[in-house]
Length: 204
Image (tube, rainbow, N blue to C red):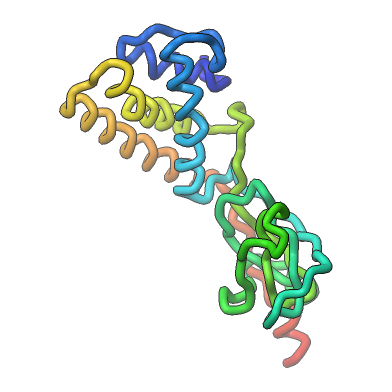
């Protein structure tokens, strides 16, 4: 079963001929290595595509700090891996009419302990983004199959001294499965019809 990190890791471990684990935190070489690389592998895959199961949206909150050259500062979501789009909900309710990249910037907050801020000329900002989805039950089957292959490539050398030819085979399989996962996710995603920008309509 691949409903959790241990289950996914065990599929990869058995494929390379290593021992299964019961917990990522148990005292074994296999568990230590899986614990070290698992979420890094997930993160890199999530950043590689606009996965529907890792996409969310929210209106981000303003912060009181002032930044030279920008009218407004917003708290940047700590779980944001990649921005998909931004809109000003005062001007539009359609993601097709997004804020231009010249109208915002992301940078480290003045108080570095506060993470990042998004600076913009817009008084309201709705953000759609890829977040660090850690609920494995939300992953698609194809995504999990690709993740297994990525783990095999990552774990194979350190745990079992896997040959270059075997690594290349699993790397190719990973790329194939990842491509299939992306294609299926894209086809299953709902695309909202384009609507007219309320701001453009108002000034006609």
